[in-house]
Length: 185
Image (cartoon, rainbow, N blue to C red; front, side):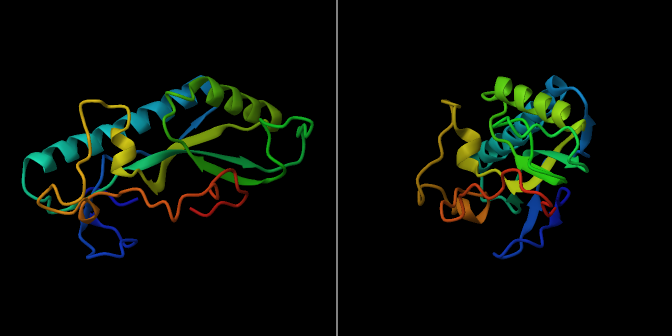
């Protein structure tokens, strides 16, 4: 993930410098409640950053940088078939591998996440790593649920939102990122 004001090599547009929130190193957890609390904090910080930057952009001129924040991520490494209870329809993975998935709105899914993470830890005798993914949060998703903020229609601002913020791209929305072994980072 690029640090503040570093160039993002994945940009296909004009390669403007990218402003991101303060970077966080991944943390390892053996307690599901603490892991979910970390997911909630990372998501809150990322969306707060986007909202703050968006509010400033609406009131001023076009920002000089692209502005980007990333979803939090759960990652675990399973090295053995031992302890896998395949009778369960959840709370386990099929076999050894590195698994990762991004999480949106962990506050809404707290109970579910605590249950899933607890079962994964127990069933595979592993801890989980919570960190920041490389998947950007679209601005529109960051403002969802905040009645004080709305994203104006294209053409209302003095600049295109797509030139500054990540916006939803439904052509790439899918479930490919859910618990795949050997996930690439």
